[in-house]
Image 1 (cartoon, one colour):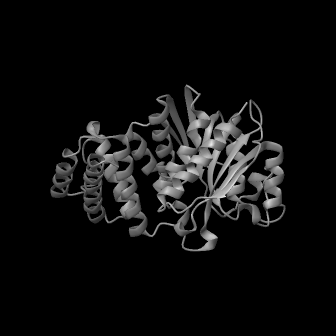
Image 2 (cartoon, rainbow, N blue to C red):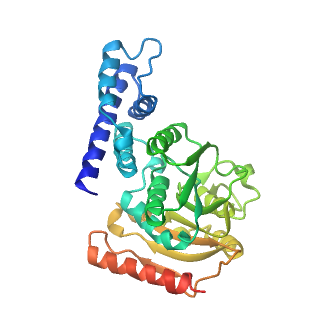
Image 3 (cartoon, one colour):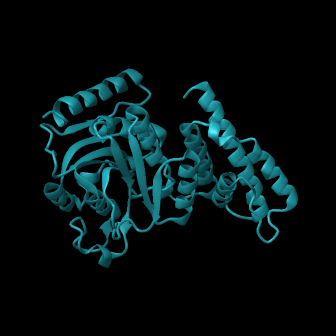
Length: 340
């Protein structure tokens, strides 16, 4: 990040943070709700007052903060990263649950870099995230693809959490990102959803509504099904034939008790093109380790790559080893995965 971009990010974050702190006290609410209120104020250009709250003095303090922000002069990445900093603080202040944690920027950038060559020939691109959360990962990858290809890129983000979707709305609105946000269960009927690319940091755990997923091939034969398995199936069903999906998944994905069912679905529906473990030093415990999974839906020009790209990223701190590994992936993409 350049010095200017860093200053832009810090300045916007400071406004969002200070205003959220004022609203948190004035409205006696959580940090994340105050942050959402502040973002809505910034978009509206004025401070919303309801039932006399916040008080006049607080309104004046807030308005002075917002008047210092010139959104039209800020880079989209500066805006995204400022909102990300605000959500990182919200996660700490409000002790937000694990499935609502943000995808670290480095991982998002790696995922975006891996798909650039796979979609760069498409003049128009629709990117879907079925577990969009705050839209941090979705807009990270959309911004990256836009900078690399200069093509027309739009997004669809789905989530059933009100608070996360409210932050996502602020995120895409302030960035002027062409993203359609939908408040729904992504395992429901995704009418009219047809994406060219799917990206997602999948939530991990069990899906409690057994009757709702009886038609899924990845459902468990007994008891609750893994929600990340179900979302993989739903996501790849929502991408066009031959389209790619890139996901952040548990490193133990194919070693669980339900792995046989997952592999059975894969055999019929999608090509497993790459499975790359992230550096172990990113995670506090073995069971929390993650990997990047690259799938391609059957159909179109899709084919199984001559070799599945398997491996583990070197530590992001070892820049030489990391650069060498990324070069190997690009070589595999160009000379194996995309070779005619």
